[in-house]
Each structure stands twice: as C-alpha cells, then as structure tokens.
Image (cartoon, rainbow, N blue to C red):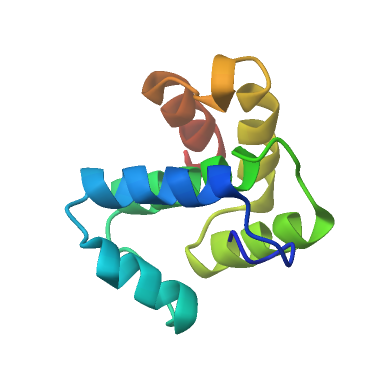
Length: 117
C-alpha cells in the first residue's frame, strides 16, 4: 500500500514498524518485504480480513494524503479479500470523524455488518 503512490513517507514506515512490533514480526522481515514484495495471502477469517483491510486503510491515510493510485490499490486489495467497495467508502467517511482516523472497533463492525448481513 505504501508504494501505491510511488513514494514512501517516513510516517508510513513508522506506522508499519509499529504494526510489525505489535504483531511480533522481525524488522528484518519487514524491510525485506520492501525490497522483495511478496504476493499476499487472503486472511481466512472474517475478523482477520476486516482487521487487515482496516490496517491497509490506516497506512493509506497515515501520511495525510490520499492519492488515486492508493485508492485503486486499496480497492484491489479489498476485492481480493472479498470486501465490497462500498465498505471502503464508508470507513473512509467514518475515519474523517475521528482523531488520526482511528475508528473505534464497534463502529467498524457496524459498517461491515451493514454490508454483509
């Protein structure tokens, strides 16, 4: 996602480093992915897909800019994970209502439930 707009911002790297630390992913593995990107595997459970998709959205928003290329990449990632395009639009709208774009988990689940129930 950070490479979708053709430039990598410091804020994006810092966010990814925080995520990696939280997920116990070695930094060497993270930096290796920047050099040699690998095709991602679709998370199996719905909760994993929601979490992963939301993290991608946070990465997209972390630098304060949203480029068309990032939106296209996000839509492709979402479709590959079985996420409807309307979900991304709803989450983006909701993100603008919260400091740093961090939407409370209950609000995220409401959005997903509205599209999938």
